Length: 91
Image 1 (cartoon, rainbow, N blue to C red):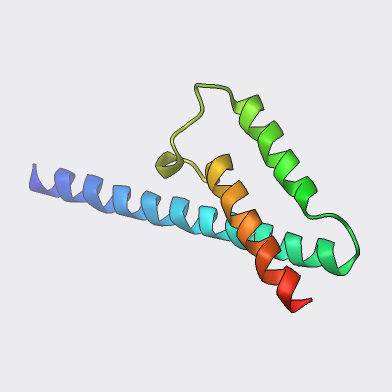
Image 2 (image 1 turned 180 degrees about the vertical axis):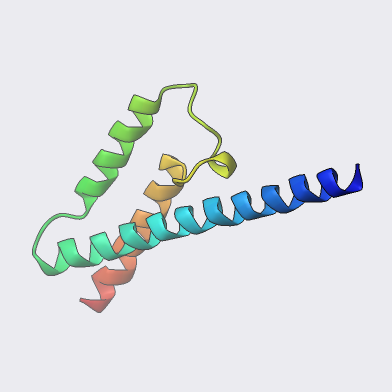
């Protein structure tokens, strides 16, 4: 029925919105983590090592990013590297 189809569509849109927000929150958290680590005198490159460990732990059967609440580790590594460069010039 049309009502069921619309309900499924609305549900899917809502779920996708929540997943996207969750991933954006994680990327913001990584960005702030880099900033705080650098201000405290820690090496933010260590965050990249953590992301590599998470990637290996997930293995080849990890959930595609668009279905996950967390960004793909490779995406997080890229954003962490960008944050390191950004804060290196600011701090």
